Amino acid sequence: MKKILWQELRRTEFEKAVKANAVVIIPVGSIEQHGNHLPINTDTNCCFTIAQRAAEAIDEFPVLVLPPVWTGYSPHHMKHPGSITLKYNTFVELLTQIATSVYAHGFKKILFLNGHGGNSAVIAAMRFKLTAEDGVTSVIGYDYWNLYPTPEVMETVSETDGGFIGHSGEMETSLQLYLQPELVDMDCAVWVPGVCGDPTVGSREKGERIVNAAVDALVKTLRDYHSGKLEDGLALWRPQFDAKLKDQFRFPRYNPEH
Ligand SMILES: [Zn+2]
Image (tube, rainbow, N blue to C red):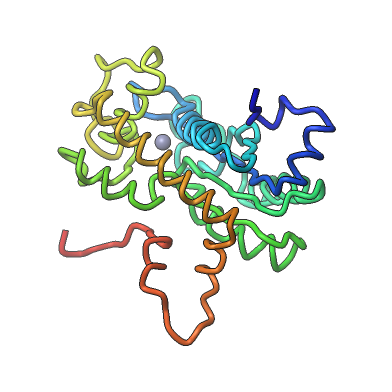
């Protein structure tokens, strides 16, 4: 039986995975308040589940998923109960030491899959930090909701939030109604301080469509990363910018018109 969870492998199985040029996913979540209706593990649950499903879907090379980094950078949530945050430098150092440990065992392709907006800037910078300062030859990092074409699917299913991931609003409420409905209390799904977006219009069906889109996008990204195509595309110093690259760099932009 194919194993995808890092913690289930034995020593000899790691050696085989290294020889097969496995890609290793490090899911990075958070433990933070998600309004009155969602569990505090929402972000960790979303990125870990999407990582596992993508790894399961790939048979032509091994993909291993580390146990998720269950807490992240969430100082802005600390005024609400249950939130746990790392300090900025601790968080960066934690990610550094996990990635360099993976690399030390011979794994040459490492992908951070982020599930929390407060982590995004750090995750985006880890590629440069680890390659320039820590001797890791290759690492990439993405927010699951930014993997193309997931943003377009979110925009399509969204009734109120325009597809913006927000916080405990339409998107995340939908995701949790699909992934762990037993932990959601829709009787409490109203806007309260600490919520960004409209939780009342969340639905299981929307959540399923978003998860499927993110899994498909991650599968494609993992294949392109394994084959070398993705990194070829990331080579920015070239005379002509490859227009297709813009799909790989999708960050929310502030638009004063809206
Ligand atoms: Zn969240």
